[in-house]
Every structure is written in C-alpha cells, then in structure tokens.
Length: 98
Image 1 (tube, helix red, strand yellow):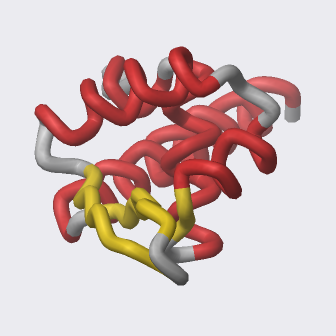
Image 2 (cartoon, rainbow, N blue to C red; image 1 turned 180 degrees about the vertical axis):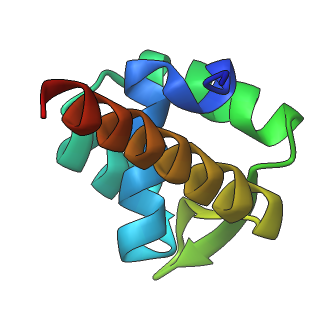
Image 3 (tube, rainbow, N blue to C red; image 1 turned 180 degrees about the horizontal axis):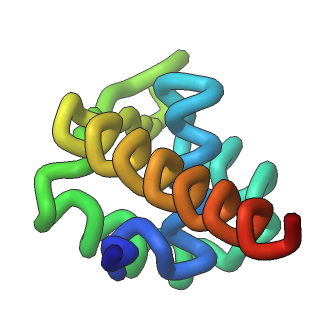
C-alpha cells in the first residue's frame, strides 16, 4: 500500500485538507490559516496545479487583485483516496494490537 507523495507531503496535506473542508480560499486566507510563508505556499500550490489538483482563479475584488484556490475533482479524489489509505493502515494497526 503506497501513500501518494503529492498528497502526503505535510504542507500539501494541510492545503488539501483545508481546501477540501473549506472550499475556495484566497491566497491570503490560506497563508494565514496554515501559517506558512507566501513563497512556501506558492511553491506547493504550483506543484498541485501542475498535477491538476488545484484550480487557480485570479480576479479583482474592490479593485484589488485576489487569487483564490479550490480543489479540482482530481484533487478531491486524490485526497479521499489518501484518507482511505490512512484509514486502512490504522485499521491494520488496531488489528495487530488485539
């Protein structure tokens, strides 16, 4: 059983989880919620976008540029598969201790 390295990396896992739970989120809100630097977030988002896991929308809100992110269907599927894999691993550990 393999964990997907794209999803399993700690910062990206937190991005996946946040977007999965909260839906579309602005760059500013995401950096604040995850307490990561802008550069760190940008590099992980780029990797996720290259893998077609995150959709990026650039727009203006009150004449101010804003970038927002949301998981794509592929991103949601990968995250759900990752969670399922973790659940199976945990179940296996529980069986080993009984």
